[in-house]
Image (cartoon, rainbow, N blue to C red; front, side, top):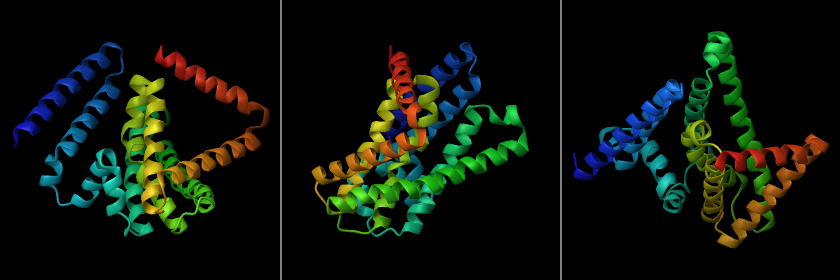
Length: 245
C-alpha cells in the first residue's frame, strides 16, 4: 500500500472516530456510524485503493471522476448510452434511498413492510423526476443551440447526481444550513460542465441553458404552490441562514 493511501486512511480513521464520539454525546450515534462508514468508503475510493482491488472499475472510476475530474469524465462518457447512465443513476439512487431511510429512522417508526414501500416510493420518485427535469432542461439547451439530443441532457443530470447521493444525508444531518446550499451549488456546477461537454456548446451558453431551466422550474413551482410559494422560499432561506450562524 502506498504511503499516500496510508496517510489518507489514518486521517479518515481519526475523522470517523471523532464523528462517532461526537454523535454519541449528542445522542445521534446511529447517524454518526453511518457518516463514519461513508467517510471510510469515500476515502478508499478517492485514494484509488478500491479501484485497485475491485473488478467494478468502471463504476468506481466514474464516481471518482465526477467528484474530482468532472470535465474529463463527461468527455469519457459521451459514448455512454442512456441505459448505461440510468444504471449508474439507479445505483446511486438506491444508495441515497437506503441512507435516507436509515438516517431518519424510518424502519423503527414504520416497520419493515412500510419501510420497503417508503423506499420504493422514494426510488421511483427519483427516477421519474430525473427524466422530467431532463426534459425541462433540454428546453433551455435547445434554445441556446445544443448540438445533441435530449438523451445527452438527461445523462448530464444523472451523472451530476453523484455528490448529492453520496453527501446529502450526511450534510443535512450534521452540518445543515449553508453546507446544504454548497452541495446544491456543487451539483449545479456539474450540470453546467456536463451540458457544455455533452452538448458541445460554450460555458456561457451552458450557463444560460441552466438559468432558463431554473426559471421554468420556478414558474412551475409558483403555479403549483400559488400564494404559498413566497412563504416557502422565505422559510427555506431563513432556515439556511439560521443553520449557518
